[in-house]
Every structure is written in C-alpha cells, then in structure tokens.
Length: 507
Ligand SMILES: Cc1cc2nc3c(=O)[nH]c(=O)nc-3n(C[C@H](O)[C@H](O)[C@H](O)COP(=O)(O)OP(=O)(O)OC[C@H]3O[C@@H](n4cnc5c(N)ncnc54)[C@H](O)[C@@H]3O)c2cc1C
Image (cartoon, rainbow, N blue to C red; front, side):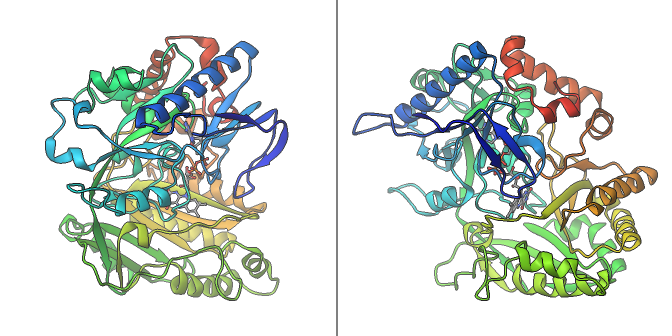
C-alpha cells in the first residue's frame, strides 16, 4: 500500500544530507488482502503499487527515488520531489519447485530465497538462520558489511562490502533482480549465462524476463537510477560460522609480505586490519570459515547504539574528545584507537555472520566516513600516502582496511585485481574533511595509484574521476543498459536523474 506523508525536511542517518521533499512516501505489504497471502500476491502488490507510482511521477513530472535505511553518507539518496521509503517491504520467500529454470543447479535450489527490497540484513539473517521446514537447511548470507541495519537492496545498490577476500561484496550474492521502472510491466533481470527462474515464475509475478549479463551487472550497483528494485533472488550458503583468533600485531614489512602472498589469504574467509595512523603497527583480524556447531558462546554484539556508560562511537562524547584543544592528534587517535580495539574488532570469537556483524548505530551527526578501494598490490603504498596526509594535517582518526574479491558489477568499486582492499576512516565533519579527501586523492593520483570511491560514502565522483575509476567501456555499458531498460523513454529516465547522477556525468 502507498501512504503519502506529505512535504517535509528529511535527513539521512548521518545527517550529511538534508533535503526538502514534496512528499515522503511509505510503501508496505498491507494491502495484499487475502488471508492466505502467497509469495506472488505480496510481490505483485508491491510491484503494481510502485510501477503505478512511477507512472504518476511521469505524468506529474516529478523526480522520485527509493531509499532503504538511509545509512548512505553520500548524496546517493538525493531527490528533488518524492522519496520512497521501502523498508516496510521486508518479507523473504522460498522458491516453489516448479519455478526454477531447468539449468539452475538442483543442489543450489534450497539455498535460494527471494528477498523483498526493504528487508534489513538483520531481518534476513534471522530468516535464514532459522530452519523453516524439513529438508531446508539453516542458511547464511555469503557476506555482509559490519552493519545489520541496511536494507539488502540499499546495501547492494551502493556496493556495500565486507571482508570476504575469496568471495566478494554484497552484489555478488544476487542471482536476479526485480525492477519497477514505469514501463508496462515490472522486469525480472538475470544473467544470460546463469538463468534462475522459468516462465511459470515470470507469469506468477507478472514480470517481463530480461536475460543479459551487461544489463544485470549494470543494474546491481545503480543507486536508485534504474528505477525501484522491489526484490532480489539471493544465493546463500548452508549456515556456517567464522572463527576469529585473537588479533595479531604486525609491523609494515610483515603486513607487506602477507598481503603479497596469495597462499596466505587463500585459506581465509575474512581479512581485515586496523591501525592508528600516528603509530607504526597494524592489527590483523583474520577470520576462517568453519562448520556451524551448537554450543559455542554467542558473541557480544558490537556497537549497538551505546555501551553501559552511554558511550557510542559517533555520539557527542566522541565529538567532544576529538575537538579538545591542547591535545595532539596523535594523543586523540591513541585514545580513540584503544576504545576501537576494545569495542569494535572481532578478536577471539566465533559465530555466524548474523551474530558477528551487528552494528545498528542509528545516530551519527557530526561525523563522516570515507572509503576507497585500491588493488592489494598497491595497499602498502596507499597506506604510506594516507599516513603522510593524516600526519601533515594532524588529524585524529582510526583506519580500517578490508580485503574483498573483485566482482562483476559494472560500477562495483571493489573492482581491483587480484583483490581489492578498501581503506576507510571516519572523521569529524568539519572544514578539514574535504581538504583531507582532496589531499589524499591528489597523492594517490600523483603516485599513479588507481583508486575507486565508495558510492555510499564518498561524494567526490565527478566525470573525470568516474572516467579514471571505470573507463569508457564500463561507463557506456552502464548508460546503455539503463537506456535499454527504460525503452529509451527519456521522460521516464528523467524521473530518476538526480543531483548526484548529474554531478557524476551519468544523467
Ligand atoms: C553503522 C554503519 C555501518 C556500515 N557498515 C558498512 C560496511 O561494513 N561496508 C560498507 O560497504 N558500507 C557500510 N556502511 C554503509 C552502508 O552499507 C551503505 O550506505 C548502504 O548503501 C546503506 O543501505 P541502506 O539500506 O541504508 O540504503 P540507503 O542509504 O537508503 O540507499 C542507498 C542507495 O540505494 C538506493 N536504494 C535503496 N533502496 C532501493 C530500492 N528499493 N530500489 C532502488 N534503489 C534503492 C538508494 O536510492 C541509494 O542510492 C555502513 C553504514 C553505517 C551507518
């Protein structure tokens, strides 16, 4: 059902985007009327409502964009008129046996679910971890980020990543996409070489199939520009756990030798390291995939809003500390890093991904985060330049680095071979922040290091940087895929041409 809340000023979770909206529109499952609602009624109700809403936006010449949990920090949630809150479309469904394409491997069928766009990572974890019925295994997502509050579609749309060094980022677990873009029917998009569903299914969900690798890989990371994604088919694994030994302190030569050794990381499921840029050592966080076993202590959730004394990274206490005069950046970072090691790293712990990656911070005003990816081969040079910049500008902060296998999404920013490493840090959102970002990117460019910016965290994507990050062929593939899905209807596309797309030269 569509519920209109009217005009208002709207802010995202980090309060980095404040917008004047003509309407904040909720969409939910409540008007699937029958008592015994089926998967198909839920999916059809949502796609029907949203396609009609987009057609109304076209008739009224309004811009419209879907949002999930509003956790992104960059302006990829911006719109001039209507913002559509999809969080209440949060169901997950099994796939009926008669709906699979003949080529979809039988052993993978019990592991495939259909997740509505607004389901959060936490909700999806709960759904997957509980075995439903005989013959269905308990399951787990193939990877997640640190947080559990993002919606599955919001997270994929900005290429959220974890540290699955031998798997990839969140877009890599998507097998199919249901998209509403105001054309005559919802679209069900799959890869041409990995079909998933058959005509029975397309008929039941009243959607038009599109099988095309370029289109699929373009739509994955499309930050609301392709229309409203109503559901994903998500591939999962039988429930597993990740075991983290106590964190290990290493110096730079040791880190360099580990990152340069594929034999070292071949056996890892999760590879991350953190450091205080004012010091010389690094702390390795290495997770190995192990079988699920009952009876292990459940890990304490990390960073759930605040601890017993009311402190949470990101609240005003942290801000106050970081602004203290007469305390050096190195001293502030030392205090910050001590808290970070105590509260935010996975050390000597074992659990399912639903138990380990639980951050649900809901309020982070005054802070901002940057993340960018480089090849693992450039990791050490990047860390040196980053440290140099931080020390030059005397900034208090903590750096986290996670390694991810490169995926196929056309605009997946974790695209560097042989592995991508994502370097990220949170900062006070003051006048130093944009200066530091520019300084860092200038240093990387000067050193000839190819980087790509996190769509959800960094607002610096302009046409020149887009070109440097992805090259002409990928940019053209993404644009052409978008045009094809809209049947070349410029008025429909214009509904989804937002400020950030224009800034990036994509609209
Ligand atoms: C505490 C915290 C922890 C985080 N941890 C990580 C991490 O570990 N790794 C990482 O990479 N990032 C991380 N992030 C960033 C976060 O994962 C991304 O910002 C993610 O995009 C947020 O998902 P969301 O549901 O809030 O989407 P939103 O911020 O609401 O939207 C993001 C984009 O998705 C689009 N979108 C949303 N729903 C739809 C839809 N139904 N159809 C079409 N487009 C849609 C929006 O238009 C927008 O462009 C974290 C953020 C926070 C606050």
